[in-house]
Length: 74
Image 1 (cartoon, helix red, strand yellow):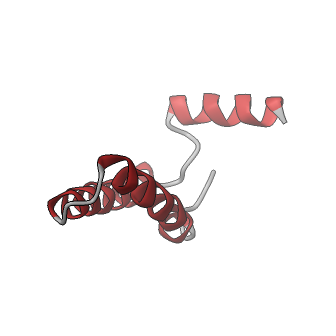
Image 2 (cartoon, one colour; image 1 turned 45 degrees about the vertical axis):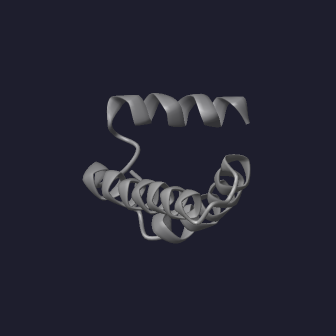
């Protein structure tokens, strides 16, 4: 398992893990932006910071597989 992580990390650092690195960055940015907007909205509604961050972290984590499902790996 460690070898798989290590080789994936090396490919990622070299820029050879994803076939289209710009598509991966775009999908990551969509998830990041959605999470930031959700935190700000929840804080404006008056929810405590700890609750806002916890809820958005769970929602953002659930969103990532949907965003990354069509990415192609080399």
